[in-house]
Length: 225
Image (cartoon, rainbow, N blue to C red; front, top):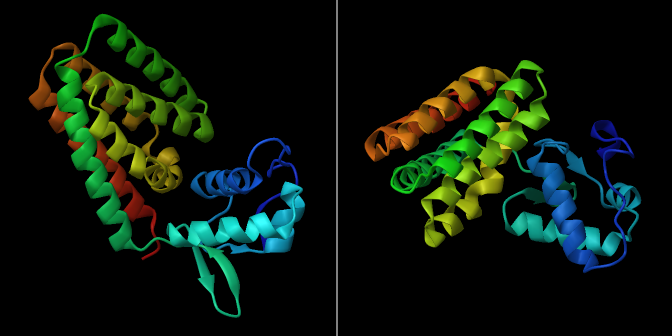
């Protein structure tokens, strides 16, 4: 049930301006990708509507859309549940992520400038501080920003679109391993920055591949056997 995993303060009540259907969808998707709504959790329309301060209709429509996109499972006579990803799904997604982000790192190495490198170093400083403080939400936010900055440096619109399509799902998989990866992730980020600063595309590609592979392995290590 919703009440088991969330408190009233966890779910923001929606303001009326703007397309309500879209706002309900975006709010539920954010709660799923951040794992405030956890895999396998039962999603009760009436409870969600109450927490969000809306009627059941936009919630029902949002759940149907989330089901189509693979975030929610609709089970006959049981209701809606947050999807529980299989090991195969995780491998497929994280393998695609590795290919895309390794190419982004290669391209970024050829375009990195002092300003871009300084921005990455600042994000690393903040990420390391968050890791030391065990502020997992902040770590996840800064990790996302770091990878987005590398992608921006790559300056490839098609690659950015493809990574954008898998970005939220990557965050969904990364959230449970963020604490385990801890400082090691930011050490790898520092190694990547060094390769970008040197303009070494081959080394940047290798480091990014290893970095994303470590995330994939950590995810599987945390899965129940």
